[in-house]
Length: 207
Image (spheres, one colour):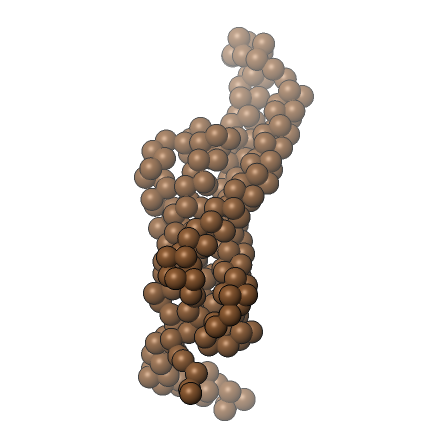
């Protein structure tokens, strides 16, 4: 047990630096950046269409802030996809089908990250919308505000909450398709700009 703890806590910094030097950052970073900011654009656009009114102000600032915050997650997703490709296909992709397969792995990883962010945003929008509807319903039942009684009832509030939930679910469904197509187009563009090449490692086989 002591041997395990020593191995887990005394790894030399030089080994860590060596591992980081093997990461093809010139491949990882561009792929992560284009997907993070493109997916962030669609997230803010969908929020503006079906999201809570409290979160629709300053769309450019929201896009820039949230895309930047998710960028490290996209970096990890791309890194994971390239690491998996390196294990499956080797440290250098020589064939077109392995480049294509690696590109699809990157698209899948980036789309999963974007979809998770979209689902979390939609869930928060629904929470805000449901809270607003409940507040309006409680105001309608207050004796001091009889004019609010004509605006609806508890039944209509529940119906509006269900409609809001259905709208958010559809937004996530449509959004997932948009994110997938966007990431597929962007990754294909990056690969084309790089001459049809994707680096999964900085190492090269001998000979």
